Image (cartoon, rainbow, N blue to C red):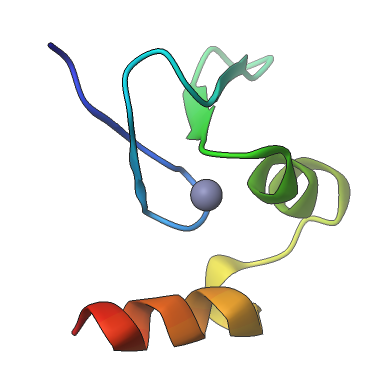
Amino acid sequence: MEKYRCSFCREDIEPGTGKMFVKKDGSVLQFCSRKCEKNMLELKRSPRKVNWIRKKQKIEK
Ligand SMILES: [Zn+2]
């Protein structure tokens, strides 16, 4: 089964969950949650500048 990663926080998305978003230029974005979708599309935040993602990535390492 194909696995996706969240385009924003880089977390693995379980098949059947998450959201797919196709941009006008044809590129596809995958989001694990509304939170990530909103941060990227509405707030246009950079994942590197978002505290809760930086914390999460530190824990993984
Ligand atoms: Zn995410």
